[in-house]
Image (tube, rainbow, N blue to C red):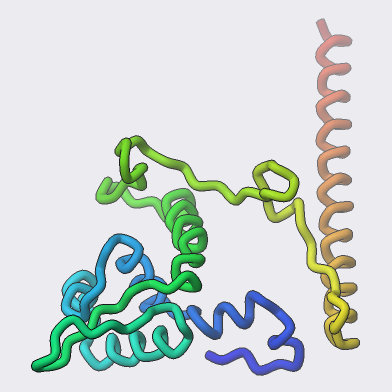
Length: 192
């Protein structure tokens, strides 16, 4: 489904999803990052229909995620090489892997994410290189840019108010819980 509301063009998330927002595209990128280059490698690895794979690869070339290179003249055959733009999606794939492991586990142990050279397990994190620290969603918020429309300003303000409401109710819950724990501790000490 294509996002069509007014401010979607300002939002990097909406623009990114317009480019890579279906599961086949992300799975093709995953396989490309593991070395797949040729049509038959993608098709065999994914079990995707030829027509669907052709459409996805064409779109990914148009969106400059892949560069198409001829490796055989007769009949013409092509390889699909990740561009810098395609390579820059690696953190997205890694974080999806981690999210899937953490939140959608299965009993079977079919894959591990390991360092390519040492074969030691890795645990990807989101990292802020400007402040030299791990980053979590609670550490960031959207702010309007210099070209932001009134709709963007209104959306950012609504989102900040919603966040502030959630933060204050979370702190109230934490305070109530702490207060309850103090009362329990006081009750325990009185009864001892």
